[in-house]
Amino acid sequence: MVNIEDVALWATIATWLLAIGTLGFLYWQTRQAGLLNSSNAVITLRERFDSPRMRRVRRATSERLLDNQLGEIANLEVLSFFELIGAQTKRKILDEEMVWEAFGGWITAYYTAMHRPVDRIGKLRENSHDPLLFKKFEWLNDRVNALDRKQLGAEYQASVEATDDVGLYLRLEAALEIE
Image 1: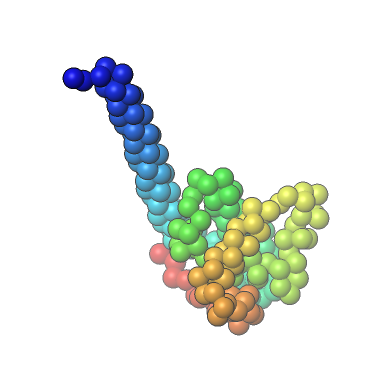
Image 2: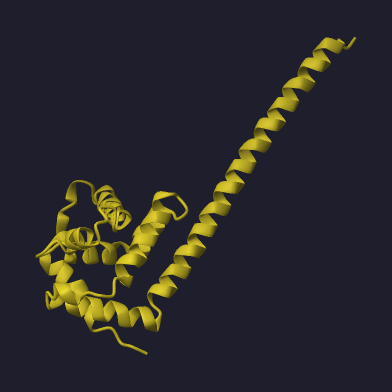
């Protein structure tokens, strides 16, 4: 004969397993939707980064950095673009590895160029009396370097920060075709 207490126990266990399974599936589904949204946002940001207007700004900025014209970098749109990406990445709106894949080289090149041979970001902070100016860009550069180290392991060298590598990126940026 069937014991009602056993049936009730098994029904309770089955209900809990179903609830836990449903919650697990919902978590996975939400995570996948977040990654898809992040991916779409990174693609959109990359399209914006490659737009004719932004290419003109990147070209002008890199030309001034190559010529070491500290006072001539009036348009901070490239830095602001990376500041925005840094803020969104830090808040986990954008996936860190997707940002690294899409923008990693540019982030380290522009960040390093803004610090060598003169700390232009430090001067901008001092002139604006804003010690937090471009802090998310700085954070993003640190995260990109950490991901580089993680991917390369023991072979990691700070070659991205080498002047020649930064110069290469800036020369490529200065030679951008404008549509």
